[in-house]
Image 1 (spheres, rainbow over the protein chains, first blue to last red):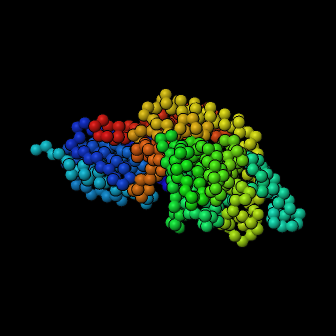
Image 2 (image 1 turned 180 degrees about the vertical axis):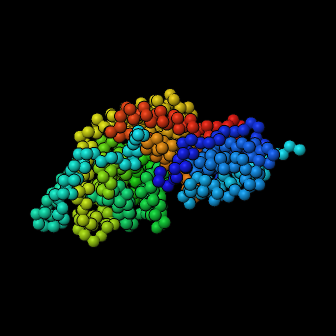
Length: 123
Length: 396
């Protein structure tokens, strides 16, 4: 597996924040329509800050790892800070991906933005 | 230290130490050019001829019907392209199957671009072609039937003997320019092969599936079959494949063929015992699995299993992290999914096709390997399923 970084392998073997959040107030379930990879993100946002993030993923290893790394990167961030996350930030977080696998990072960022768009704020 | 277990013998096999010893001797001592008339050359010629006899013996052919190539892919290219180019006066139709190795599928696709018509026979849920379909597909302008002896992903064994009998029947009825090629790369050394019993005209084999090194293979060409030469520029291989012979690799191939012939019964029993125990343990420990391909008519060393709710590449890499080498026919590249065409041809859905893994055993695997792989596999499947949104009730 020479094309993947050590942090990639670590996240693959030991996924962080896997699962769902019953109390989530921002949820998105996005799919790459071409390859079928799927990412489901559940966020608990309080006082404009992401307190907890959980993910589920189906697809090739980069999709699984991008979900895991994304939840670590966004936990503790404000909604605005999370919205500024880019595919490049995530790629750096996973230690890089071969170009043919970078669609996995794009799916993760799309899922994050979709979840934040659906954020339910208590009035 | 992490355990290392190699269960990818259908991809390639480790070189048997006895084969490596024969090759090393040839590298050191047999360096003449077999085409040279002096003693050094004749020593090399003798080594190549001895290897040719061993390869011929493995498939019950005559030595002068063996053409050494660089491997199975070249043998398949030479067989199909060579036969087609020599047969255009008689027709431009090829019959093949939907589950051929890429080296046959690719050549057929290329011929199609050059105006040939290709009929790709279905294989149904058991991964085996039906003779009735083949019979119905043969046309007056059919010049070649190319069907693999055994499949490389699911191990299913095609009814090669019946195919040969049908071709002979058609020839006897007047279709004299109909030929039969079989890709026996996965079958050689794992099934008894007798080219006369089967009645094939062309048969491809590869050394590195037989515990020999990569870079050498052979095409059996029945006497009287005309092929257009693909490699020109030399008189080697009775004018059928130009280029100085790869003497050490051919010597290794000969030794591997001899060992495969002598040890086939032991090897098959050994592989089958491990494979069957592995499948039994998988069924006991892991739910939601589908065993792909016919349960009986298949190679003894191979198991192809789809694990529901997860994707094959993720499982493959999880196993690799724990030292277990397997393979998957599916690939996700540049955002485009390519589920295994072989598994798709069985009529299964994309999810099962994406979740398929091939485990292929070999003569050096042990019971301890099976125990280790089953333990690692069940943990990896559990971990990946815990991540999968497909396991969520109401979200599938």
